[in-house]
Image 1: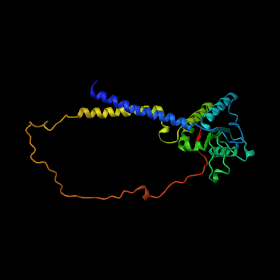
Image 2: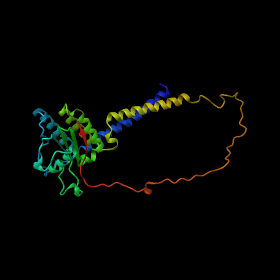
Image 3: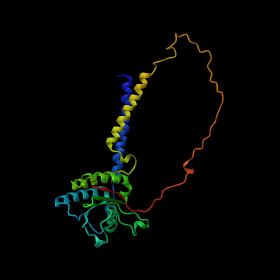
Image 4: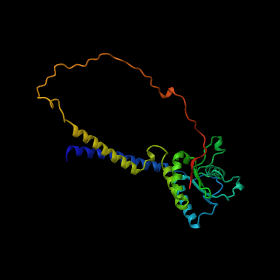
Length: 285
């Protein structure tokens, strides 16, 4: 085995070893994020998690979706609720009307007090946080879908991530309601396993591919350097009798330029925080 190949293999194993460490970190962090206490929300007004007001699901389909909802709730520690409505749905008895699907999902969450943890006294408008939940409203007449997050779900599922979840489910929701909702349930669980940023959102497969690509790039760079090394020397284009008479660097003049580098403390600005409320996204199916 030549030295170049040996060097490549050693480097590849090192880089892939780092990739394996990242994969282990991914699973450890995911497992930690999915740990949760027992549900202690006593303020919730209903135990129902699937409301098919538009009567679009068969009994079998409802059973399947309820089982999926129960599984994610126990796995993640969150309330996951689906409302299927149409233009004839009447929610006036609870003071609500069919309109923007995301806003309706958020209002229904607040009205029923959905969430895994106990709801705080007062309102999120007073600075309190909402409880961990995802509430979906799918309007079968308009094709609008609202995906509202609260509590830890809002913290871990950014609005951009929520949009991807919604778009993924809406692709097939019209023709395959069970499959569409299952897509959103599955992606929600994966998003909750991460922290919403950094390496926790990298899948094990991506870690493996990145490690492999880095090792190949390293090999190619070093191999090309090896091929081009020592192709010319000081005597390549001479008869070997060349002599260096004088060797000096002469500086004619010196110029100094000063540039102010602005630090973060020189600029103003910031972002506000605190409070609760809802995050999420809207889509169309």
